[in-house]
Length: 151
Image (cartoon, rainbow, N blue to C red; front, top):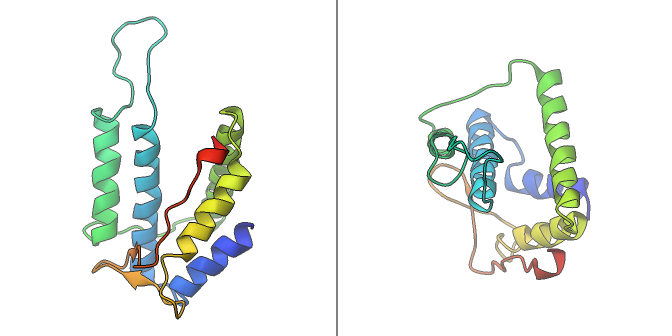
């Protein structure tokens, strides 16, 4: 699988995205950053007690709250500079692959597994399920990703 397969999944879910869809997806993207923070343990090399990002840190809570506000429509965003925005997205994909590689994980295989799992969120007719804000839900046929072989 590749980025085209992921793009097809999003096109199937939202064939004609509107600004609300953009904001919900941006909130979901930030939510995944929060999940990454939850999965990490931080320490400071000189032991000065400086607060490092973690589940109880201010930055964790702020990003989590900001993501929730985007998904609910309480806050909206729009792309001010399309060229810079697409560059940042491509860079985020590239650096995410690099982080997985540097953590000695099979990130390509993990993306394939997660993409397959995401397709299982849809109905048997290939239709997505949405919550009241437009976030894609896990349908009754959802199969969670089995990532043990990637770590």
